Image (cartoon, rainbow, N blue to C red; front, top):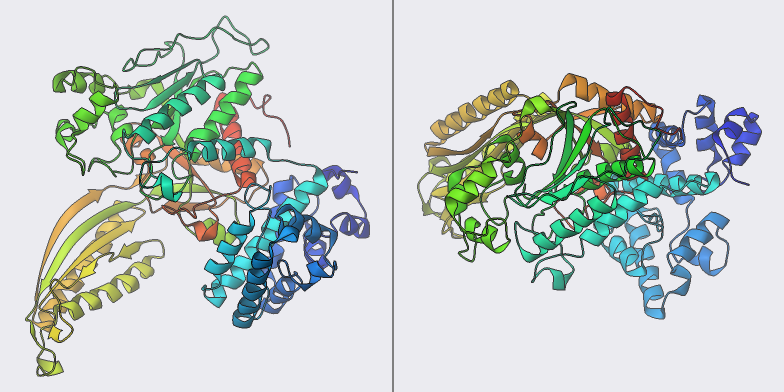
Length: 629
């Protein structure tokens, strides 16, 4: 019999503990402590409380929990001494059907891992989708994590234990993250399109107006139509724009509206209702080279799932929803960035059309080949792009869902986070010039070592940014041109990337870094030059929209956690013309992004869809159409 929250909340303590038996391997103390917090508002709240119990437990208790788990394809499996839950999980991953070579490999990995860390390797083998990882994926994860730091690896084992418990809890309650699975599947299917040279290696690369990029646009366009958006078209820069129109004065939400607008021609602006405003949402579908499947794309498919559910229910809202899959955000093929969202704000620079890619193809030529500007005429292209500029008066605001692209939510075992601001940033390219001299004959006190000066600055960046708590500073490039092993460096090139949640905080960080660089160079007798290459103002979330995200997340029973975004997003561009706010979704593998290991779970995506639905209900002032968990 499947379990219900009402049943769990009403059960006597020992009965309730028995109902949660098997969640955490041979460790009933976790469920026992979490049950003290009854009644539970939602399954998501129960999951969060269980994780919190483990987080607050002493290290020895955490180690005992890890050691209570069996090895993968280990002795317990061979002797059939696994718990029923572990047996089911290892069966789903096919570990009971290992080839002799795979079995031998896993045995050696088990031995190597335990020798290094002192506890068994833990992996949620049913995976982010819940359907099971392949044996090749399991072995690859094993090999990668074998090289991790013990402190990190202990926490990573606990995170996988929480994922195992989450899936077991779903099974007990008969709950499936159906909408999250759909979002997962859309992303997997879209990742089938990748560019030559990368696709053959199983790598994902989709740059602006490549064949893979255009195929993605057509696939997204088809899905939007399938999900019930009233009109969908590809605009003059390649954005895929879908609209779900507002409730008309002649309609009611008790009947399904099957009166759809015709599909506009490419370049035509979407219709806007004179009686209602529009909520704008979306994200980008281009990728970095050899990137992940979720960066940007998650923010297309989460709202798409919500619109589909509205359409299926025959419901309209008092405002229209405009969903935009932005064509470009990453700046990979051409130097222009935020090209897709910038066109909507009127910030498309005419000279971008003349930019050349690595093969000497201009942006205008690429647009012509893609059918965005059939004539290939610069004036015609610029006129069509200028027509994409949105009137802010017609919009309520812009909201974006995005994978976090960082480790914060992952480390805190939290599925969702509300963005307070997109960080301000400034970038420099710098050069320090000293005096190249003989490494063997130049005394240490008489050197003018350019590299040491830059190295000293790199350490200062680390210390100074940490003083603010939420500032970050990076020296991503450090090079000694024509350096030799036996020559004191006379020249050193470097980069600076400084970010903070506000312009004021960034400017203070920048001033201190520049002042310290000057002091270092004066003391060492070297000289420096700095060239500013980028400066972007912070984009603080609109308080009212941030509060709506907070209320939406709280209604799910999920802890409300706020954090700044260190990465740039399309919301940063829309912030220039309308209020904006973002929701982050936890990333797996320490939140890594711009990397094939970028991942999140269907359960977390389910919560993102539910939070988006509740946000819509809050804006509409009518939560009746949002079903309770």
